[in-house]
Length: 377
View (cartoon, rainbow, N blue to C red):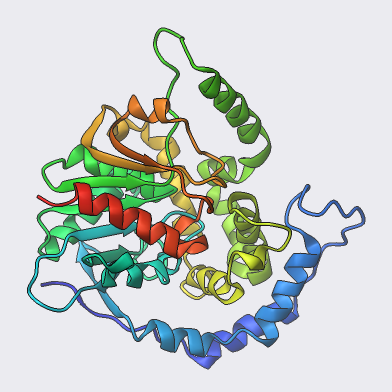
């Protein structure tokens, strides 16, 4: 097997450089304080930066991460990183591929994955593969254009084949759902079932007849696209220009990512009642320490140039859809039924775009229930 064990090894020198850059930050003067209305909340950001500089312990996080099973090796000629969770004994376990998106990383699954591996709610456990997408974290940045979600799907299929999994389930949100959709469409012989917590809306019905729910959904999506997706337009057209600032300023990178956790997650007035500060910062460190700000953002650029042909056609493998209440892109069931062989729809009580990160117990129980029913041969 080309995959080999992998350890995370950043030294105190890297952290000293981070601290030096934080100390040298020039914060903008926010003369009109509108909270989150005009962008990242200045007070929340400054307090998190203070915590990052004074209290966050990367060495403890690195030690914790290195207790897990990491592998890295060439898939299609470029290095790909993944976390592996395998269970004891000889009983067959359904293998699951858990796919993150942007601005996430494998860190999103650190609480939920052990629950799935152990068998949440007392049921049988799963073998899990949790990769870093090409150009994200510890996976090598692509050396040529064209690493769009369809190409990433092929690479992740190659990873599963390299690991010896001929048949497996796929779960994803954000880009993970898009990549999972492409993977299930291209390799129905391998993908036993697909579970998503993010849904591509797709066009309205050909006859134009929509329910009141779908009409309301499309109106809300138009509003959301107009007010909340500037990041996508930038990263889809000129990701390289912005990357010079984010690669140089850890606070700039944190501000860019923090806003998405605020807007897209399900929370009250205090974001840290839902998300753990250390976990959010460790996720940001996957971009900062590895220097993958640009290579990760290019997924938007490659998608915008691809034409999306890899998403054409209906996905026929059994598909589960978890419609979390805080998900900004939560589509009605009828929209998904046009694209997927929809085998189950669930509506968890809590959670948003980063479902595994926000509500690991709910996420794990929902995914486990679906794959036990639809993921076995």
